[in-house]
Length: 116
Image 1 (cartoon, helix red, strand yellow):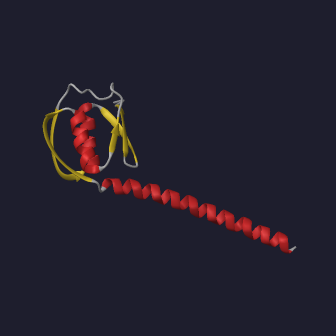
Image 2: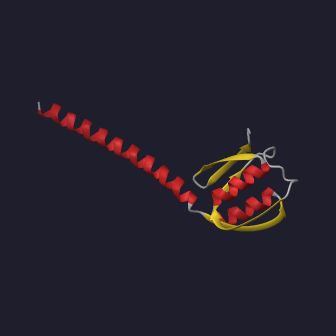
Image 3: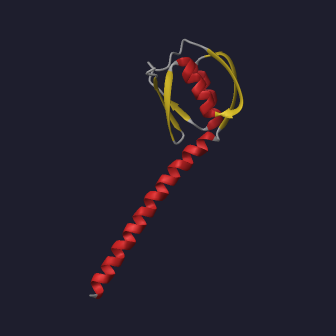
């Protein structure tokens, strides 16, 4: 009878530990998403390609951008000016102008052709 009681206690403890671990993982992902909103960039460019603009943002932010050649038109140029602005505001603006969507995972961003 003592062994069954210890086994039930270990099982209960293991379940509590696993639930806590899942909760911790969820909170960590949520904090990462919120912290990304705090990343600020300052950029002023005239008639620059997206590739050059992304390089400038990468250097300031520590983010890395990945895209297929058919997603980004490197012949078009863009002009923009932002000072101490959220990286997401800048990416939203560029996405609207250039017709792409992006997904952020940690410090990596993946771009794809907009479905709009």
